[in-house]
Amino acid sequence: MRQKQPGENKMEVGKPNLEVFAETLLHMAQTDRDIIIIASDSRGSGKLGPFGKTLPEQIVEVGIAEQNLVGISAGLAGAGKKAFAVSPACFLTARGLEQIKNDVA
Picture (cartoon, rainbow, N blue to C red):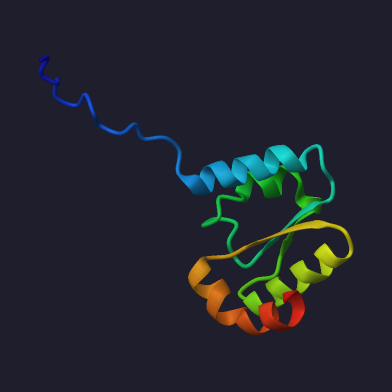
């Protein structure tokens, strides 16, 4: 039986999921004008800088207002847009819960 060499079974490290998410959204939004990103002060942490520079008309920044993030996203989705609400999970799930219950559910 052959011995394994050092490092042979190490997992390959790729791009972080957040970068892949942001790049994929940008790629899709370039051909689909119905894709709108609503960000809650998360352009930097959500890796959305390139999206904002390339498609500024398809990104809305609501600031530190997760409740508004959910309400605006729900309204845009109700109007036929493909809304992506982007915010750190710890803030979105806690602060936006009432709007999720009232505006989305």
